[in-house]
Length: 318
Image (cartoon, rainbow, N blue to C red):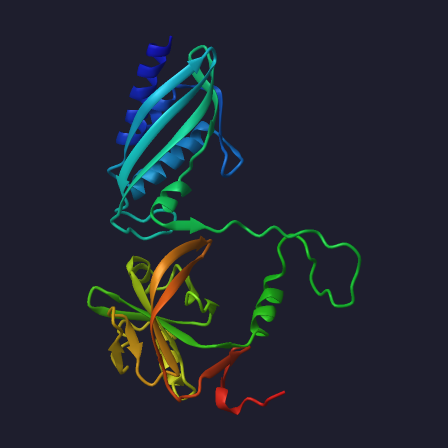
């Protein structure tokens, strides 16, 4: 039985994973087949499994999967496999990196009359992003609040009202940065206020960038980026980098950092940093970077609050 099942399995997996012929899986599994991922914890149907294979093959068109061994004990078994592929198309919102990844995993199966009725897998498509150096942040889970409070303006369970969240975010006072990189030899950049210092030793910073930005693909593919803290005299510069202009650097004076990142002249301060981690957070990617070069001027920074810009030099001390 083992040799027959192994051959059956190898043929179906090669057709589905290597050639995209997901219909080959129909004869491999039972009608009530359920696939459970340990990372997601949910049970998927055969149609869900097929859709995942096709999505992975779209991002890694040259994907090849090899069954390394199959161990059977009656109606239970384990499948050990490995795969390799090149990330040449967008996958789970991540633009192509051109990197080749090698992954491996194991599936624990239950058989009924020689067909798989259920399996628990230790791997899913997100593991490919891990292999590319892109990790995923889990969703925050809100706990129910108990008891009334005079300051509660929105229920503290489920999803908060988007308008309340907008109001909350507008109350947070930030500086204004322009994050820059290069697409080949073309400078690219966008205005960002989701910047924070993580530590001084080592010097780590983070920026959060929306995936729909025209700069996102170039930024994701880069090894370094520039972060420019905008001065109070550069309001026009902010407008330029917040726009959809095709050439945002046409009227901007800038110079290169040691690793080629565009640093904007006249900024309050600028750094060039090496991108060390990329965390996927739904619509955004969080870039964690190690600072490699820093420049500081006497120009006072711009301040942003509730949709308006302020002169950082005129702040009143408490």
